[in-house]
Length: 264
Ligand SMILES: [Zn+2]
Image 1: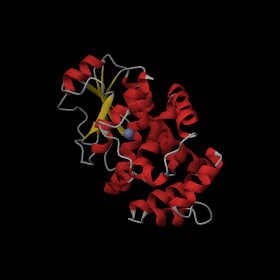
Image 2: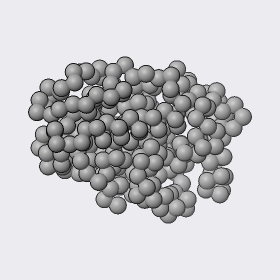
Image 3: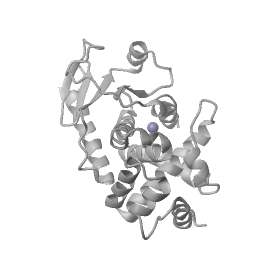
């Protein structure tokens, strides 16, 4: 439970305020001159020298590949490698970033900062998804938080069986008895005053919808859908363009999802 709270709160402070800013691409990062680096195809990892950079570099590339497989975004090439700062522990992270005590990490200036913890795998899978979606779709992504958080949480669930089980429980006990209507889900913006239960339900339902779309209709159509949003199509038109024989509008997607996932 603690894990889920951390991830949810993480998105209060980070995901809703992500800005796509051209990053610095020096291998060493001037903010942390005492940290070493490892560069891979899509990432620069900066961390203290006693951290296994090779492990986290491979992990980040694996999550990147998983996201490509689910979204069919293989034609997309990031303008610059993404930087991931890994602090050695929570105290160091809090001291050096000034973050709130409950934060598990954040994205700022297109850079992920986090720390070694039992949940770092799922945190990285979630935040790397945001970096890719933010860059591919551009500023239009801010209109589609449910999509961004849904895909990020879907990747997070795949990265951690513990997280997946927790969200599956929330889906069974909170979503199935009383799912958010899609109009409410699409306009849902987690705020500080939003209850953690409501946020968890939002993540559980959004990630289930994304999983449903990808598993039922495949990753190529999902790519066409994302590309439509990138090209400024409305949500209804992006759906109709990508799914001409199934999810032809938000209301049709909702009806099919309710019937096949909720049993209504
Ligand atoms: Zn998020």
